[in-house]
Image 1 (cartoon, helix red, strand yellow):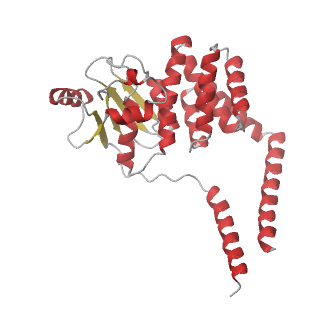
Image 2 (spheres, helix red, strand yellow; image 1 turned 135 degrees about the vertical axis):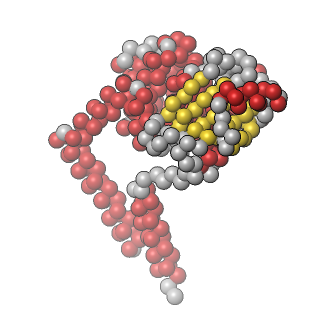
Image 3 (tube, helix red, strand yellow; image 1 turned 60 degrees about the vertical axis):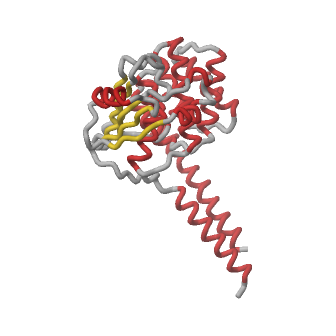
Length: 304
């Protein structure tokens, strides 16, 4: 047997298969049915607090209950906020219920969550790949709510029998912290627009390096008159560089961002209009030509 020929044939087949797989849409295998609920409870709640939380969440008897530990909170938040702010107890709790596909994400935050807002949770969830969910978040006492996202994502993993990429979970938690800091300066609506517009721009023109990420952030903030500090720009750059290098489904993220922000929706519409224009169609044809050349190159490479 010609080992060299066999190896080349295997490599060629693998390369073609890899290209084919890259063109397939992302598949989601969800075990949860419409109406199913999953509850995440802080591991340090006492019995009375657990019962009170379940009553407040209006959790059905059929809801599956999981626990979130303080160690897990530190694992995903430790790179974003001081350990002292995370604390030594896991108290924040949440419930995720599955609506009909296409319903989007709805977040209800109790008065005991005194720092993280609904839009911040929602945006972080879309980054992690969640598209349809009804989420309730609460705690037995007044807390920041920074730990709640860990519980929501853990419940999402259990309910769908999947494992969210560890880096993606850290990025989602970092986004939550960065966004909330910016909200203190410019408000919830402008922060929502800023974060989502950057996501859409990243999906349309993926930057190659940190400088290009910074340019996107500066251009978006200037175009929509959202005044943020240099430190906040640096925080966003750090966040989106990590996001760029994580397993983010950018098409899905941009689509979800356009649902919740008028600015992001306008950016998406502009891109769609461009692709429908004569110039846009010419660009697409050029792209197809480039892709065809890549295929021809691979074929010729393995043929030799």
